[in-house]
Image (cartoon, rainbow, N blue to C red):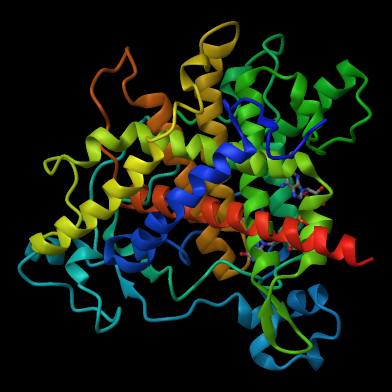
Length: 458
Ligand code: FAD
């Protein structure tokens, strides 16, 4: 039912494909400039190695070991070591540890003694700790400085083909789509499922119960509907077209993120025969071109994040709200100008996503907490991704969408008039997620031309 011709409208967003593509031609250079030339937006802090997968046993479920990687590529042992999945998924470049509270107090006078690289103004990279908010759509980092994670260069670790596949990757995607099974109000406790009542979220043990409960509820619901779906199989995109707006939006965000990841791995693909990195049209056709609904969800995400960035624009210009480079006024001003350039372009089109329609009527208001908790579970699931680079970009993008949802649904909200200021990691994740979507839109357009050329040549 999805048409992706330029004039077609991206449903749930008030824009056609061609409008979004035109906007992207305007926004992309500014986004690339921001994410590729500023210290603030080219480094990300995250807890990449110290969190266990809270949903299943890492050793059985993860696919980060060499034996599992062998399964994912034909004749892996024939492939030079540097091109093997286990190697491709590793992080590159110097990393700096979180500075800890005492060093933070010393900033900005004494930049962190780290190892991020000679050209990096580290006072523009490290983050001050701040408190979390119950309006977050992502899981806050642990309180103790020791587990606050590392700073990673996003430029040194581009999102691209890693060879991570097989049962480990499938298990994560399946679990992500399972989060989409919102309960109908006729079922008891529906809003409580996956509820995260403590400020730091439930203990790890609770997640298993939540997943099991979700599975049980889903089976019950399927039996009730005489659905042909087998237990634990998430609904497909088309089945979501009949759902209410909120559930559909949830599904589309997840599917659009998946589509964007697939686009990057197909665009920056390793030809393991020649050792060259190049676009793989066959990969694009089998994962995206044949599934216009996935492409539509990717464009939908572009519209949604554009709207969030446009909505954030008035706050970004205010120095009292956001400082980009502590102790370095010149870099601070340059970074702010680059952020504003992106925000102004995002705000240059009429509103393309109307968040005020969500969580309003019917079961809408009760869905909001459920929606937020489910999104938090997806961000927790990223700790189950068994490839470092994939986990880095998976975590960054879930945090980016979480931030976009927070801006859309928690800013200028009548019940809570004060605006929650975003943390540094949220801002970096939001703008880099926008940049990922922007480069996906651009790659999809080029892939489309390649497919047409192939068809003409036949
Ligand atoms: P998958 O992409 O694993 O999809 C599984 C199933 O989901 C499909 O069979 C289909 O039924 C359904 N599906 C697929 N796409 C969509 C969609 N857009 N919407 C709805 N349903 C869909 N690999 C890399 O090479 N580089 C990376 O950076 C990378 N990052 C990853 C990040 C995460 C969080 C995860 C979980 C995986 C990542 N992977 C990455 C692995 C990659 O996403 C695939 O899992 C892998 O390439 C195997 O692909 P597949 O063809 O088996 O289908």
